[in-house]
Image (cartoon, rainbow, N blue to C red; front, side):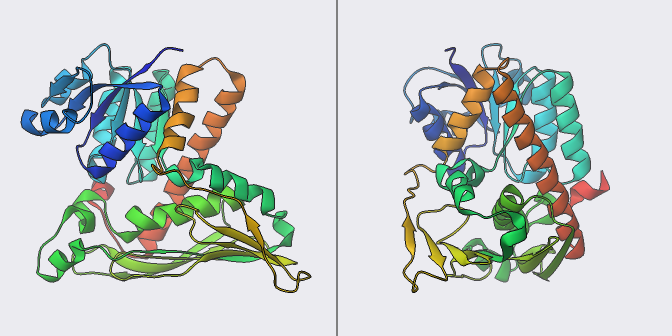
Length: 337
């Protein structure tokens, strides 16, 4: 199988995590590193064996012939332009979630990727984890589901800077950021991945002084049940996540990364079935492996169908995130373009 020659944009901790995951699959080689300064690019690359190209100019970076796939983990607002440049250069793109700021951007990238015969993946790692896929085995048909509650609230130390009057990227509308974009996206992906597209969405958010959402409660309305999502970066929650159905409850320690799962049945005297799940030490290995299967097997019909499902899910999640953000009154610079 041909190795995937990977280039990366962004030199933060999540890029290291993805590169380590990609190399661990045995399907990727780190071919090129881009940063705004050569010094930062070289600093990033020295942790990995082998030789590679280092660039501080995007045009030079995308012109590298050996590189066939680019992982984009720059600030959210930069994803769209960089993805367009990568596609025009004939590169597959793996874009860190949330991939794009608006449905218009998402539709443009999907269209351009198809036209240029390259792959576009949104790096929504939780839906690629085996534990996430395994939960589908324990979910009844939708007419037997009566509700669900998912939670992901984690206090960000960057909020301390906001309270001091600063505007870090993760809390800036100029960089298409906020709690919904950073953490809520996992919850929306889980809900749509398991239950499909809701009929209605409602978002009750608390905006902070930078103009983005700091936390929020979301209600997704389906035909026979509602799903409540709680996200936040200015507070901390220690809640489990649950799916309720006619005859029991599926309990999960989280939906962004499932390490524990239990199935409670009304007829079992309260004794749960412990579901055997385990999260990888590096949670990005499974998505890196999934992407490699598609890239390396472009003619495989089954893989092609799976790819189209991921693209459609990414499109639907993007649309829901956009509607939720609008309800919260959060305006990004990208909305003006």
